[in-house]
Image (tube, rainbow, N blue to C red; front, side, top):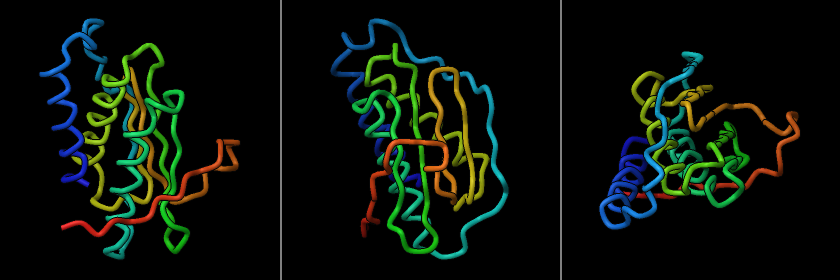
Length: 150
């Protein structure tokens, strides 16, 4: 998770340096309102890739999908589900910035392969769980296939 999230943070940082006009409204409020980790971890090695890929998908897609995006890993056991949402008043780049900060909060305070974790910052929130979120009447999830990177 760290390498993919850090790569996303670098991209956001570069956007900040080269496109300051989109940040004229100010930075997102990264105040932590709540953070929950259930303390359990997925045991297999492939789950780390699933968690990372779901996080990347929800972080990258939330700004372009109404500031709220749901994704799930491939349906093999265990399936990982994720959700990211931002304050709709934020510029898209600030939404990504906030979600990367939320992901960093999770990576610092939760187990490496969290079965369930969420963080709510003032301007965004991020959630990873092992249960289907469809019972909450969310829009259909996008299936995210793990990528073999290295």
